[in-house]
Length: 178
Image 1: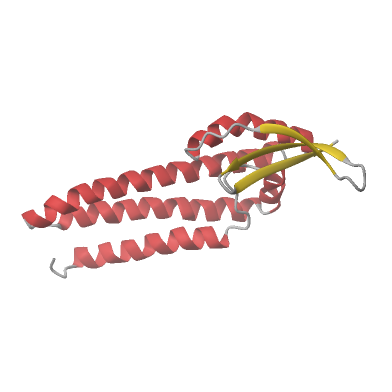
Image 2: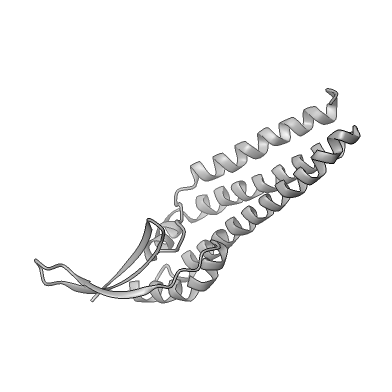
């Protein structure tokens, strides 16, 4: 591939995309795990505007990466290079698209939840999270059946309902005081 103005711009697009995805994620004040937890929405609401803008930078990094991949495939002129570049670009674009959709899900529901649940109780937040459970499982491509288990602190006599779900070695636990 020849060094031209187009290849220089494409190279800078790849650098910009990587920087946007990384910087948007690293500066974001609240990182949501696989599943939403009741405290996530209050934490997002506390840093709402910074969280929104850093997530936008992160998401737009996916768009810039997609532009760079398509542009790189478009400037390839040799038949042997095209034979490998177009399928590779298609797979890369599919991966970027799926990643962007997953990130957009958390962006949308994180912002929505921060606004809706900022003044609600723990119970209200837990009910909203339970309503999002199925959507979240589809987004993470893992369907986990939650199990309700009653745990308590043996020493203090405190008891509460704990909703447990796990993905392999990553349990997600929400404790409802009770």
